[in-house]
Length: 149
Image (cartoon, rainbow, N blue to C red):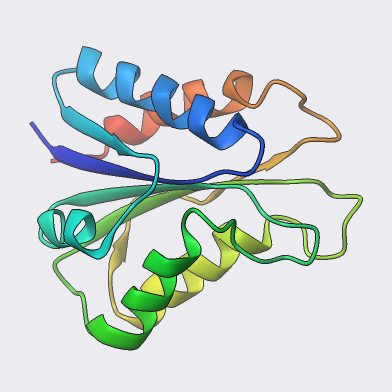
């Protein structure tokens, strides 16, 4: 089964909750998933030829939370081409803000630019419509895990 690093960018804990639920689902299905709450470059390096699941919220200005921004900048400034990486994105946001799910969208755009292989569609979760994000993310993770090799 697949090895998955779950990289979390959270502000108020919702993204971490989603990541921990995803880890439980993936491990239950026979995969080996590990959550990185304060992800570092060394953590990312482990999964460059495996799977990464980015679970991130978005600040009011459409930016990444402080917990994951350094990893994003490292990937953007130091890695470049990543064709062996397979990834998924769960983006949390609030559609009442103009940069809805901007953090997750930035991560997806960066990895696409670096030729990483996205698995499935990006999941966008709107806090103003779904105050319990795991009700959307859990079924998405269950389906996503079936796409892993």
